[in-house]
Length: 455
View 1: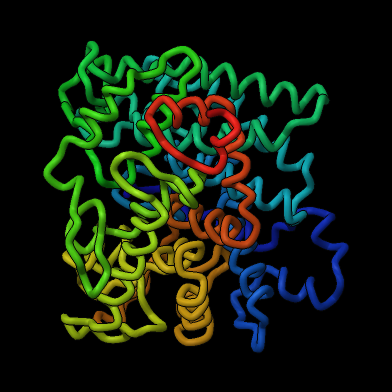
View 2: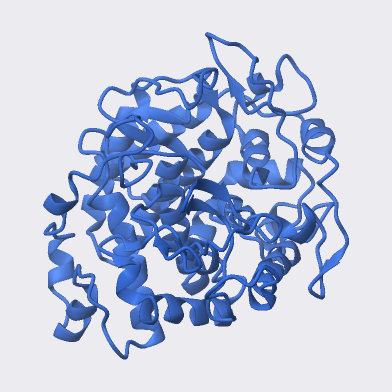
């Protein structure tokens, strides 16, 4: 839910090639892989998934910051922040997208490795606050760009998204070569130096979102669930040097009026969270790496939580109580995105008619049939109105006759990653294979198929 970057490079980047590997494919496959905004008729489901994943990935590859390689906050310059803004959380999502691209051979393994080495070398010299990165960095200098007046220091949630991606990269690049070893060693150094327990504000049983050397704990934002921040507590419990106590999770994360629910909406009982579930990114950001299959703790079964949240969101769009134009079983998905009058976290309780393609597409693991139905609609109905060289536009609103001229890293990344998790489980397998993550989950009393051998 954050903002910025530059559009002046788009024309230059239009002609960029991904790699020699991509040029060696058959004529039929090369047609699907071509960078184009033209709508290709009669694609199979697999061809369409290939196309959408690869073209969306280009946001991070072609449009990554030229100096740091980190992910730009957004594809358009807005809100006077300029073209240098890169996002730490969105970079974590982009790292995972790069791993997908390497695995599917859209780019070579070496190309991915060299981009990631550039990124981690830059991060190792960038501003940090007790090892935790700010929300925004200057992509050329590594200096903090304040997210708001007092938000000019460490951002624990965005950093958890970043480290989620970095640990996946460490697991993927496992060869005993000098460069792959260097990548792993640099990631391990960044990971081990992050002081998660510092963000308990002196040992309280809750994590705090922000700390700044200029403003201290002035933001005073305690991180309570249920929302996108489960991964933050998991990372904090998994730290090899600065892990939180389990009490921080069991007394802090769950201690809110909106943690437990238990009510039914559109015929689906929702274990946790706000009524109607809130925006769909709650089911995406933490679960790019965390595999929700069989993931349980004393509070919920997270596969049940996420699948029901998705179905409630979709059913709201089908029933369309506000009578917005375009909503249907084919056209659904409410989450945080740009909208016709700014930026908003859309949900059934905060619905202004704006559909965000990332909502349905990043839900593929939870609703494969329904998400494919939405994907085919987005590609073939609004089609060229919302299809760009970086995948689908961030959002559209048929009632307002509006289409976003933007892409956001935090919306593009989950599309690539969650479609891949649906297709192969790649990122889930990488993240859940991390010994520290397994230890952290056990420390918090989680169950998961990945933990059976450790119990």
